[in-house]
Image (cartoon, rainbow, N blue to C red; front, top):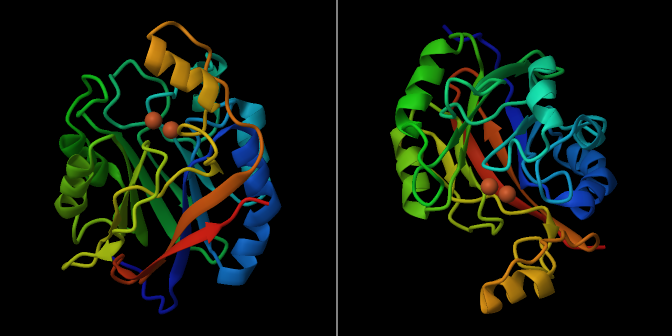
Length: 268
Ligand SMILES: [Fe+2]
Ligand SMILES: [Fe+2]
């Protein structure tokens, strides 16, 4: 079922990349991070790439050009309407598997590393405080049934608000996925662990964007909206981004994780 290759696969997972500040941080630092840690494969969440709201071909290419292999998504997936057309043109994009059957795009993809390892990336969205989506647990089962048996690693981006629901997914996939991780809250958690049957888990990888903000947005407008309960424009903070990411080392013969390590690059 699995290829008999003895070396490891090192995968860098980046959470929600927010706007110009987040994109700039990735462009400035990702090539060096990849060299330093001998990274084979990079996944990032792209739901906030375009000034905080969705993805366009142009902003996605900024990340693909510097080493990102796959962009996952989330509740902001269709904020840029052009992405409804564009997503089907490139299989490096995934969107939540448990969107409705009418959604364009795909819920999982398999891409190949330079060394020839096949990496599957699945994206699901939670149900708690996220809207009425289909069951993410049934969706990952469906994805696993569809994904070819010869992949060397399986990543699950669980885009969700509730930590408990994300933890549930981590245990649900233990022994089946290489790494189950949360995105969406824009705050990194320090609960990285390798579960009993070998699946790495972290509740949220965290935002790559400015933390002098409210989840990446300028404080003034976001705070005014909370206090006054009147409409306000949300604007992304455009400079001073930190990178939060997580590096997972995977044994391709078992697909299971050997090591999980958080990476932090402070704002420059
Ligand atoms: Fe986000
Ligand atoms: Fe989100």
